Amino acid sequence: MKLFQKGELELLWPFYLDSLISPMFFLVHAFYIIYFINLGFSMLQIGVLIAMAPLFSLLFEIPTGAVADLRGRKFSVLLGNIIGIISVGSIFFFTNFYSIMLLMALAGFGATFSSGAHEAWTTDLINKENKSLLHNFFAKRTSLDSFGLVVSGFIGAILVKQFGLSIIWPISGISFFVSFIILAFGKEVFTKKKTKLSQSFRKINSQSIKSVNYARKHHVLFYFLLASLIFVIAGGFSSEISWVPLLKNLNFPEYAFGYLWSAIAVMGVIAPLVSSKLFKKGKEKNFLLTIMILLALITLPIIFVKNIVFAFLIIIPSFFLIYLSQPAERVFFHRYIPSKLRATIGSVESMILSIAAIIALPLVGLSVDRLGAKITIFLSGLLMIPAIIIFSRIKEKKPQP
Image (cartoon, rainbow, N blue to C red):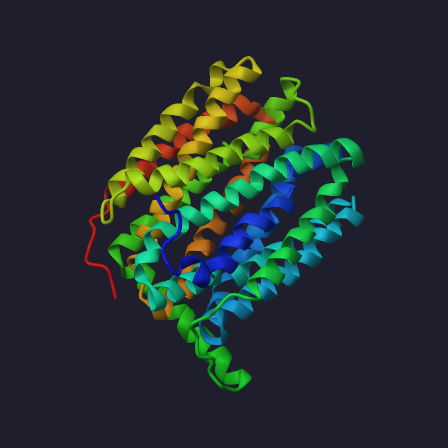
């Protein structure tokens, strides 16, 4: 069976190559919690630090998403990469809590330029050139991204063991640089509008309001986004902030978190490819609902964990299910969005998820400080239940053109 269709690589090679190469240098996720713990920060402080990125994403998400719709998705994504290089790479030079907080905020601001724009860029390009490529594009991209992260775990483990934890920041800055270079070659289907700055801001405001109202009044998108908000809050209670201290208390070596990250990323390689075979077009809702239920059931036994092996039996399947859901989730979401609002509504989604993260992350840190990691992760399973109920209420309508 051919992995790529005729003409697919010719059209999409920059996006596939970026998904493969740039994650290899992004070492942050495997080690940053341990790095902050070693700086002497409490879990509440760490939660606040991590919340800075989604907070500034929330403040700037819709305006920057509208800029992408009006000025070009490619321009927006490349600008986000430049800001990522500066913000993430600079953390290497600081150990002060407030300095790092400002840089995390800058990273969140930079991320807004690519969050909705990246998917809008590729989705509109595929819809224009060859619609048949869209169904499997997100699955392939996620798998390539995860394969890159598999490599990053090994690179991170070696570099951290050799040079210490602080090396993760400059190397992760290189990740954004690599992404900038590769995506500069990406084709864009977009006609830039010649307008004055004042006119652009008025259009941005109008586009943002129109997109928010569209998502609010659309039955499927409203329930999808509401369920996503609650599910992300629940996921925060079972994120790195809780898992890392639990594994650290079980005497898991610091450098070995790179190998664990690689193992999780392997799930990200396999799961999306499996997903594209399991879910059928137009049947994404039931597929996603099943995964949400299974994820909640797998998380609850965490209170009985007393060793590394038992912990891994929960961690690995949980991440497999999360990766399994992503391609179907993206197809389901974009099926109900008109092209002219695609980037801005994508930014509305990112804004909603930012709200969820802002609410959850400090609470998760406080919960780990006061209740411990096990109870915090257990609460995640309980919090998934209302998200499952809301998602089940979606009654699908005919998608917009």
